[in-house]
Image (cartoon, rainbow, N blue to C red):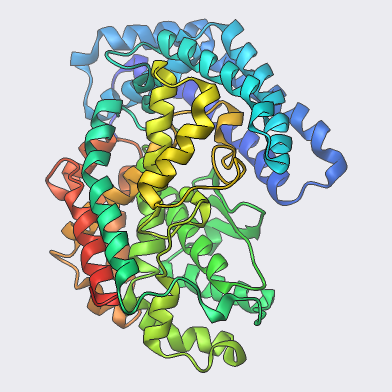
Length: 504
Ligand code: MG
């Protein structure tokens, strides 16, 4: 990285403080999710809140804001790295500089309460109890969108917070292509003579002890190339990855005694996130070019490993005897084909987080259409439950009997987050396009059939990981594949894979 401009040097000094404080806050949050004794919850919340306020103050500091303004007036004098630094700082600073403090404070107050209201409403299946909170959250997000500014659609302002420059119109175009293709593919899979939606292996008869699952997770992490001297794995209720430093990337997994596939998928998914964080060019550490560029590209990396590698039929065949060596009594009678099927069951369901690779994106499309209509005012929050049922019927052919299985299932709205979901599905689309390109130079299936992950890992490292957040998502994709995002690769990938598994 070449930095010659003196304003940029000053901006980097200031950002370093932001980066250090962000990482310190992340340590407390990691510990909260992994180790916290129950009585410490309130104290820890206060500590995290204190640091969050310090961070806001750093982002709003007058000298920093003035320096950034100055840098923005001299863009033509900056080199590529310097321009990317200014772009990322503008992007991060937007939230602090454009939204009035009273609105941020009001949102914090509303969401602090909304989370508890949501938890209770979901467990009691009472959408009407959550409705007042949802109305407030939609109203505040509409105000926030106005302050953030947008060209066409208020939802654009929220999407951009998670996936820079993504618009509702572009998302609708992409989803409009994959939606009918997915619905059609699922129908054909269900009609196949080989169709199977349940497995006797996970019907509760067998137990997969935690120590063996942990060893299997460690085996996978090491095979994928996770640097254990620069990170570690722990347990949490909801698996996640966090970067406490470029050389301290933490992942978590969880062990379900009745289903070893859960920790298998979580570990591979989170290790995918972790490699992206560990392998950004070290010169970007503690600069605005550190870490991954967007939620969508991050999910592309994690889902690439989880689905395209971890559930690839050739890799599952390679892994079959490994699974059997970890769980000889439970799995000894299984053939390779049965293993392949076991990891690639397709079943329309109500709950997003339990969805398979084929139905998953439809869960996201449902939320996108709903959030978009809520933000534009086309859909009233009181009608969200009914609209959810209608869309579930349209997309999956099934209707949830309760709101807990429908409109109340996700935590995100109670946090005040809208615009987050589409990045999950975008990750699938980015991943498939990267895979198609990777296959030009890597003998993908053959490598996986031998359990060799080295060339796949190197390709992702060279084309995505090392760039940190220097390029915007679309720029990065074009650099890696030569083309803007095209959803056809995802459809082709699924068609090819599942036609073979289910003899379509
Ligand atoms: Mg993830």
